[in-house]
Structures are given as C-alpha cells and as structure tokens.
Figure 1 (cartoon, rainbow, N blue to C red):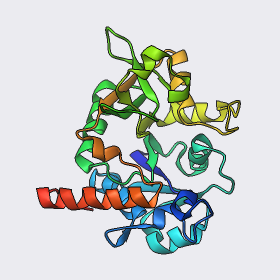
Figure 2 (cartoon, one colour; figure 1 turned 60 degrees about the vertical axis):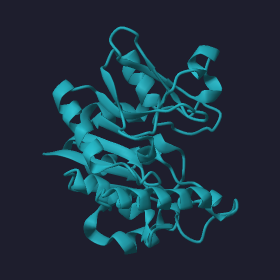
Figure 3 (cartoon, one colour; figure 1 turned 90 degrees about the horizontal axis):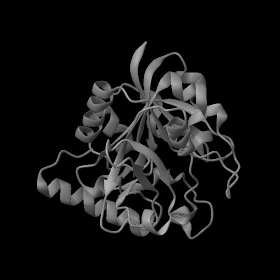
Length: 256
C-alpha cells in the first residue's frame, strides 16, 4: 500500500472565465505563462514527493486527458454535484490503496511544494484525522472561517461567511480547501455527505464538522504566504496569478 495519493479537482466548466457561459476548454486548461493551470497543480504535489495523482475530470475531460496523458490517473465526474461528490468519484481508484489522501482544487495552482511537505510532516507527526492548510489575512472577506478551541488551538469547524456570527466574521484565518485525510476515515464517511443545503450539493467542508462531531483530531497549518492559496476563477485572477509566478521567479523561487 502506498502512503499518499493526491486527488486534484479539475472538472470545472470555467464559466466565469468566459463571461458567464461554458468555456471552450475546462477551467484548468487556461494558461499561466504558457502552460495550463493544471500542470502547476500537478507538479506542486509531484515535487512534494507524491507519485500517485488522480485528476477528477468532467467537462471536456478529453482536453485534460490529452494534455496530461499517463502522468496521472483519472476519475470521471459526469455531473457536477459539489466538491464532496467530486472526491467520491476517486474512491474506487484509491480505497484500500493508500494511507492518506491529499485533496485540493486544480484551480489553486500556487501551493509551494515545501508547504505541502511541511503539512505532510505535521500529518505524520501528529496523526490527525484531517490536516489542512489555512490562510491568515487582514481581509478574509468571502472565505469560510476556521474555528479553533481557545486553549488547544484544535480546529472545531469551518463556517462560511454567510453563516458567520458577528464575532466569527472577525476571524482572520480562512480555509483555502487544501486537505490531507486519513484514507480509511475518508472513504468510510464520504457517503454520509448530504445535499441538504442551499446549493443542493455535496460539500467537502461538511467532512470537517463530521470529524469534529465524532471527536476526531483536526490540525490546520497556515501557509507561508497568502499568495499560495490564490484561486483562479476569472481572467483578472488568471493575470494576477501570472504576476505572482513572475514575482516568485524574480525572487529566485523554483517555478513549476
């Protein structure tokens, strides 16, 4: 059994990249500095030492498959029913084959390999059910806030901004949706996700509250810099991500 696998969510249509209509290519195939977004996401986990990588593809999946070829495996999400549903599509490929599963979105390609390695080290040292990255910023508007116990610092939940109390809205630590799950726990619980929410989708974040309700241990580690968690949904964000890559290059960071 391998120790780790990565599941990268890459099924998005990219409507916001194309003025609100379905794009001619999947969102993760838009380019940053001449290479598709997904290539950066894949290489970040490869450079962190992860060999087994599953891309969850859907919309115009052949475009992604033709580009990535046999470097990765593929799980097919025929209907986009949420992030939890996307991860569930990888269950058949990974159940009983790895000890832990790294999950993140292919439209967040700027996580640094050294940050991923550090989270893996923490996961191995502390053995939580879920380890996750977090971001601390002055303006976390729009993001789900991470709740912690005052004394221990253990994560107790994630609350979306629209559901925040006034006090919770003041929390500056937010969720960039990068996780390491204990594989056995993940596959035992992912079928318990519900669509009883405003979007009628299966939310991956519901696994956080599920783990807390079961008394499981969760750990969140802040990223080294906020730009690592930058997500790409619009042409403006695509351009901004290219700027981040150029700045990293100028600073001497090794690029994907």
